[in-house]
Length: 338
Image 1 (cartoon, rainbow, N blue to C red):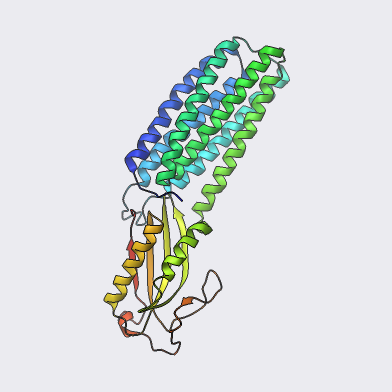
Image 2 (image 1 turned 135 degrees about the horizontal axis):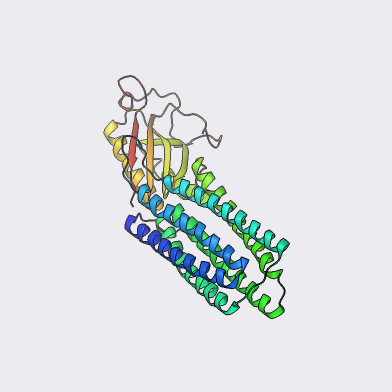
C-alpha cells in the first residue's frame, strides 16, 4: 500500500478546490437546464448541488479531523471523516431520489428538449472539470488516507459519469427526436448514483463500527511483531487493528521473560512501535506488557499465542513487570507520523 503522510494543509486545499468547482458547475448546469428544458441536465445540476453540500462537509471534516485530542475527545477527532463519508452517501441517495422523481414525472407528462448545443457545451465542460478535480482528490486521499476526500472524489467521478450519460442523451434526442430518451437517461443516472452511495455508506459504516484492518495490513504487521520474539520477549497475543479516520490503531499483548526490568520492557515496546509504524504509517500502537506465565489462547484467532520455544509455563510472574497492586502494566505508545 502507498505510504501515508498526514498533511492537513494539502487536504484542506483539495477540499476547497472541490467546493469551488462544484459551485461554478451548479450555476452553469442550472442555466443550461432552464434554457434547454432537459430533465437530464437539471438532474445533473441536482447531483452537483448534492456534491457541493458534500464538498463543504468534506472541507469541515478534514479540518476538524486534524484537531488535537482534548478533554472531551481524548482519542482525537479522526472519525469525523468517516461520519462525513456516511453523510455524503446519504446526500447522494437523496439526490438520486429527486432525479428519479423528475424523470418519472417527465415520462408521464411528456416534454421537449431545445437548444441542444448549449446543453452539450455545458455538460461536456462539466465532465472534464469533474474528472480533473476527482483525480486530484483521489491522489490526496491516497497519500493521506482521508476517507472524506475519497468519498468526495467518488462523488465527482459519479458526477462525471452522469455528465457523459446526459451528453449521450442530448445527442440521441437531437438525432432521433425521441422525447423518452432524456428522462430514461435520468433514471439510469439515478441508479448509478444510488450504487455509488451504497458503496460509500457500507465502507464508512464498517469503519465506524471498528471493523478489523484489512488482512493485508495485519499480515504486514504480524512478521514485524514476531521478529521481536527473542531474548526478553517470549511471546505475544491478541494482535488487532482498526481504522480511525485517516489513521490506524493497533494493539497487542507482549509477554516478557521473568526478571525483565520495566525499563527494558519499555524500551523494547518503543522499538516495536517504531517498527510497526515503519510498515504501517499513521498508526497508534498500544502495547500491553505481561509476564511470561500469562500464556492463553488468542482472543481473536482462537490459536495459541506466538511464543518463543524457551517459554517456561511454570515460571513465576515477573515482579518487575507488575504494578504495586499486582496488575500487569500497560505501555501506551503513540505516533501519527512515520
